[in-house]
Image 1 (cartoon, rainbow, N blue to C red):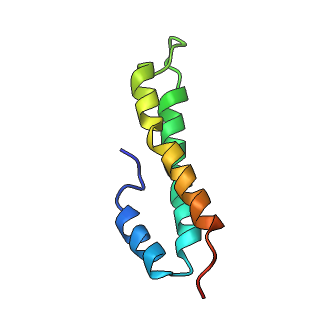
Image 2: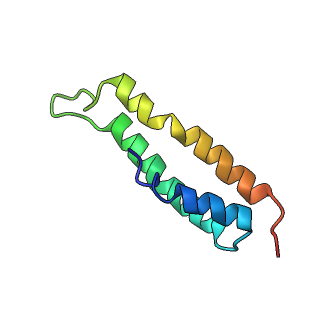
Length: 81
């Protein structure tokens, strides 16, 4: 489970409400979420093989492209004042 799953609800509310801190907060939440996904995908076992089966590693990466797209769209949107 990604560490940013809990704060996603309040972050979505902040974006809709036009809070100034929503863009940086979404970016900050993207970094550990992507880091956890990459860690699951790339961690090597002591035998030299990946620590997780490749299917599970890739399953951890599934939310990452959607998160990158969401944060990119969020930063491209005109800032509400």
